[in-house]
Image 1 (cartoon, one colour):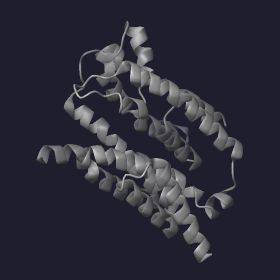
Image 2 (cartoon, each protein chain N blue to C red):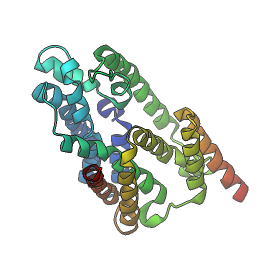
Image 3 (tube, rainbow over the protein chains, first blue to last red):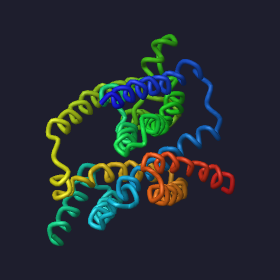
Image 4 (spheres, chains in turn brown, cyan):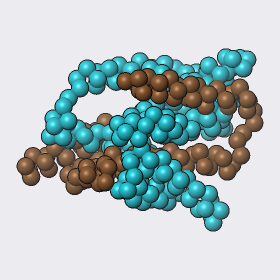
Length: 103
Length: 179
């Protein structure tokens, strides 16, 4: 619990710094294109990392084809412009349904 | 945490690393890397904010994905009022949603049986797909990050694998140089 509180405070301070730095220091100046490109690319890189780590788990122990298929169907729904909450609900229903069928 | 950090991806990254037992530093670095995008987003909005340095610093705190993106105008400026208002709506909703989740606290078995364990990865996946929809050229960043994270989590703690996946950002520079 202490680690969560300490980490939360540190993250909140870092977050404040990120959001304050631009408006206070940079004002009208823009970061270099290379810096902006690297920072922008961090989002897809880390989000992919999160999806992968969450799905596979340590030493791939959490790998579950029903969850993978649920996410594939949700991604398809997203491609068809379904709302985010509907996509999540579809992933949950498909995964739970497959698990029920194969139980 | 939701009240102070107000960033789903950073919060999940921090807690994923912490739950894996890789330590506080890994969690903080993962969360900090995830939120690094707020620096250029806030900088890009700087000229649209009002007041002196202190007021601008506080107005910059309203930069959140869900409010910053719709507040961008075609001329490159930010609709300050829209961004601030959207954040003031999102903040209590995010905190209340987190509180409801904590109060319900279902068991791991129940989560698995009803497929609720896919909620977090699905949430990340949708954010990723939205990100790739606006920047299709970043697909190779995602593919590289997938390979790094998949191999990394096989050999290393999950938090370390997550941090290593950020190295895929350099692919963005390579693809930009070639194009």
